[in-house]
Length: 364
Image (cartoon, rainbow, N blue to C red; front, top):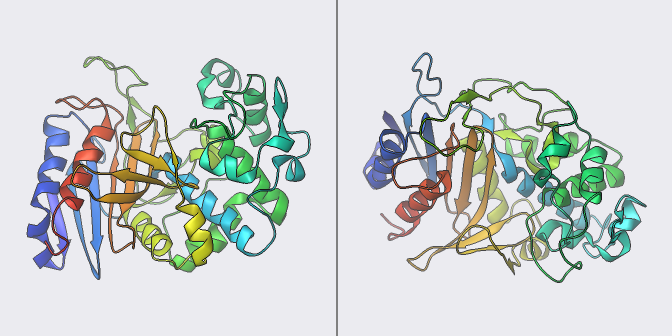
């Protein structure tokens, strides 16, 4: 277990965070965990456990990992870029850009807007809830994922409720590609990753199962909760099943840099950032959370509210949240998807880390 800080004077400020990292491994049973805090012009990095349980190698700031639904924040940012350029409107119906794609079984693409996709008020069925159908195919295309969703009826009338649905962001990614005539991965790279110098951040192409560059192993119990459940290595797998909804790869440092630029107003014009941060109530999701356009707010018990997103895939769970102005941020990743020691899952660990970092005076 180790912690690295820069400058050294920041180390003492994060003793509570480091203790939680240690506990997540020693009591929670996680293979490994890392966290980076950025505040002003300095940063702190802490870790516990192993990047590779076979060799015992520790986790490092350079570790890349699958970020799951934090991908949605990148996709929403690209969509809002296009809105700022006047190429698409948030109130455009999906039918305008994807004719006939949303239809049948009670669906009507003319009643679902781009905004409803981004804030999960579309009522469109979440295709990842149909695991049996997904398991029928060795690989997936965005079109096949949407067809899986269209085979199930809507959850509610568009605009009348809230339900988290990965289908929304597959459709948003398809709209980006239709509007620009280019791949979603290219748009994310050109509009966000390259300008910000996010050298460890990318969306894999097609069915590429490999994490490029330095990375930790990803360990999963495949949703089993009993302590004796076997652990599987899920580092390499076909992430085409998640694509725009959760297929991206990044690092803790890149996530903090992205979040700081986004919340700090350096990626979107002020009016578009306000729309992104305009939230709707959530249901059956993260406690204390509201949802905007690809971002969420989480109200902490101390009265602080943080902004960002979390993501979970097989063997990799992540959180990246910051203060509203982007001045202080925390990015954390576990390379296992289970916990013991009183936490129901890694989200419990993440919630405790947010409290430890943000529920204290800003100067400490």
